[in-house]
Image (cartoon, rainbow over all chains, first blue to last red; front, side):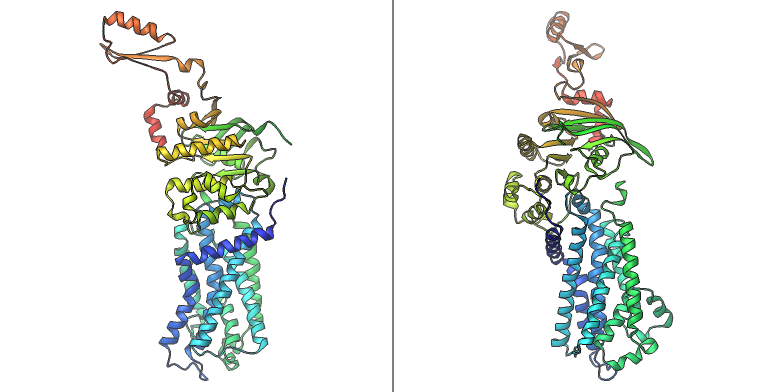
Length: 268
Length: 290
């Protein structure tokens, strides 16, 4: 008997299929892909005359938050919603009845998250840099930080999205269950507001969740060094951020492995 | 290991918290045959099928599908089976050709995607996204995805539900071609004419038990095909079961001395036999059918 196609080959095919579907789904495209870009444009327009300190414009100030929230949307929200729908519509069940390996399925999801988030932040940076006159960092050290924060952010967001996909009771409810949670996290994590201006208790709550650390890490990359003093505690807290994101990554991985299922809950 | 049976089941039991879905089913499906599993809703058809497909675990019993226990079988085993599940509405944004080609990539020796698309009659819909297909077209896409891996054993769960008569006949031709190509098929269906048309053997399942396994021609035993002569007597409709209907009719002719009111002579259809087997009246069954 001929050997099964290699997992690498099927993973690549899955990634291509996932990306194709993503860009054909209008809802996904707007609420996951273009949302941060639209919001950056709105904020830049609304606060066009506001000085956020040291000549930093609204566009500059909100760019890191939008990049962080984009990463969270393309990983957590995208996977939590689509996998819930795939489970409800028996896509997962159908796949389980074929020789496709589970690794190839998840590799396809990772491929989707990486492709969409890289395209998203590239587009965000192009718009910020070319249209909104945002000064982008030039030092390699800052881009190196960007790289590890991006990798940890997408990885933890992805495993948490896979785990959370079992929460919505139906595919139809998926968006309605996932989106408000993400929205809430964005508000308390300083994506839409100046983080240091949030009430102390709200900041304490946000410190539990990954998005706050993702946003703070991105601020360390895209804001002038002088802004570090404005952060609560007067530091970018990159070390703590790395630890919190890594803990979420490990916790998410363990939970995802335990709760992930190929069939609906009512399927016995 | 090659065996004559593609499926061999002994004493299959599956319990759910609220009921026993399958209560000791035995089943043999020979290689190359089309086996139809008949039964009302809730009889245990789907549960049995899903255990054979590896989706559910049996609580008791020996199960052998293509030489393996489906609950433990791996990817090599799944490459040898094909599944067409009951209802599907997935992957709305992908086209027929994209889906069939993509699924071909999962298998070690798939059929040619273009040939499969042609075989299910979707050539004109190759570039149509699946959400724009009609119910019958969607079902044929499901069959295409089920057979693309060139399976030795194909599971078809109520494949023609919601088809118009012409689509059903086209579908039957497709299944007959698969059988000719040597594919073993387990078909579950509500439609008796479908079983009669396609199946080499029929198994009737009710209340989680296999009541009878036979060819469509011999289902219900010899007595089941006894002719029925009915007429309108003074006290209402009368029916007589007899092996000699002509003699019965001539006796009635003598009795009435002319036209016998509402005279009818008929052989029970497979449907009549089936209804008698599962012990339900046509009226009860109507509810189960829809």
